[in-house]
Amino acid sequence: MSTVLTAAQILRRLPHRHPFVMLDAVTELVPSQSGAALKNISISDPVFAGHFPGEPIYPGVLLIEAAGHLCGLVMADLDEPAAPAIGYLASVKRFRFVTLVRPGDQVRIRATAGTRFGGMTDFSVALSVNGADVASGSLVIALPNS
Image (cartoon, rainbow, N blue to C red; front, side, top):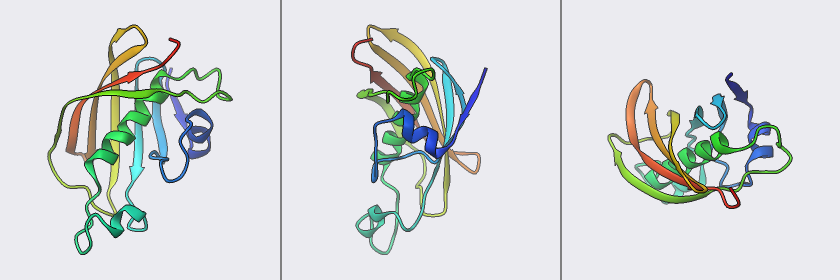
């Protein structure tokens, strides 16, 4: 069974706050298995003041962070929304960027859980804009006390 999360529900389930709230909506969430989310890229994001003046490009490291947030939500216990899941990005592997992400883009992020080892889970993630791939790779998320 798939779940959809609004921005308010995301805020209840993740510990991140401004300026590190990276997801605008979760369009699909199958706990412990997979998820899909949206990240709207706005010219009003303060990162564009320095990245780069005259040629705004959304930083790849922030795209990785957004994908990590989705992975954390996939791992979170949806029955305990009052207790935010604090997962840690433990590894970034084989990440490649295909094209630039700019203001006005809506990034669709997909995450699929793979191998679990101890309190860590390996995820395959893919990011796209208008159906075209912009980045993909593998993230490992660690949940302490798991």
